[in-house]
Image (cartoon, rainbow, N blue to C red; front, side):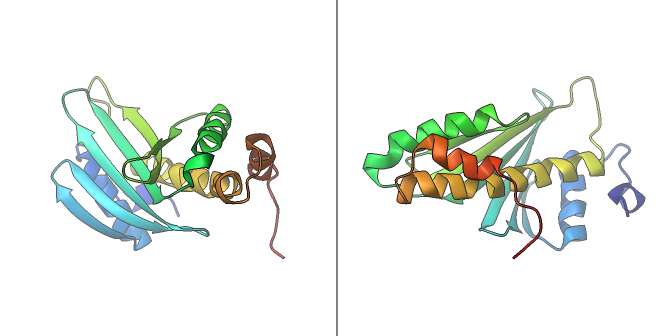
Length: 166
């Protein structure tokens, strides 16, 4: 059943819609401010911290999805190479590594200029895309940092989508 059947979207603040989506999925969340919400979304590999913030100034809804990653110093260069390769495979959003915070980050900005309104299905898809990409590339990042695989080898794991479960 589509989220649009449960959540009205006309004239609703985008963070209010995200809060309804989090409630719908029973995700843990905290409304940090009127324009910001943080939540935890359980994936197969990790629990992802997702923050969405609305900027009325530039009419943009920014999504940041993070998970901890502390690569050995000698593998940071290989991790950045894997990030570049992963970003080449992503159509919307991109990965970056915040070394100081030891966080892998997926970022995406949804521009809603001209008083555009994001619908609940669109926001739900945006959140799910962040988790899907984090899940897709998490094993590749681990292979590069801990198994000392090349970026090319590691990214092949992300590209080779498996169907079904063993």
